[in-house]
Length: 381
Image: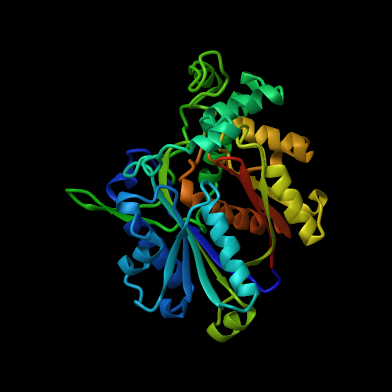
């Protein structure tokens, strides 16, 4: 993917469930983020040849191909096409993959990879129906929270370890906000209420009032005698993110200064019952394709779907001794996991951390429902 350059990556602040962003439709939220992306790069949106937008619950306000609707809501020219992608939690990372492949192959020159999810307005699971009986003849299909429990059991992870990781996620996210680490990636969005318009610019999901004791007091959420609670799971939330991807020729022609490039991607399919344990395999495939190893990687963003998923990933990838290089600014447990937007969000956060450290390579990865995973290797320029 030598020719797939990341010009910029931005995101909205993340709103907690039924919080500040709950009054804003997903297409309108995504439209604001799209406009911020092109405006701050001085790009005429007419130059965008496609919008790839991740969204998981494609129903109601998030239906009707939100990847087309959001650019129209944003006021972009009708000539800009758009499509909507669902690879569950990896949806907007798949959009990165699609956009990078199109650009690197010479089929397109300027693509926006984006994602959005308003989990307050369009509840998780609202687009789902019953699964096939033929599927159930072959596989036991369980809720993701149960899969997180099975992973904790199989990898020997204690409740104390899960809660300790979760507390650290909040601590890191709060420190990142305090130190201004998210300021480049976050674009404030305007939220209207019956009384006034508010400019919302800071993540409201990290909990300053949490503590190890508070986390330990939470009851299991999925199994009566389990270890997985609301506190060591990702937060339901609202958010949008977008990545501008362009060829070298387009950057030169349009005066765009790329910040990074996509080096490679990796996909994995794993047991649909355990479901959430494929990150090491996806990363290994991406790193092998890039001719790299973990020693070459400075920062890893692994989606915190559940604490057990991250701890399992670190163990299997041999990263347990590199605690500070994995999600150094928090993740889904503290920042939230707006399903379709998370892949683009972690891309923005990874890029900012690589720049902050002056490091070269980073990896972003996330598990995907029904036993998949996706990963990307990014090189800072």
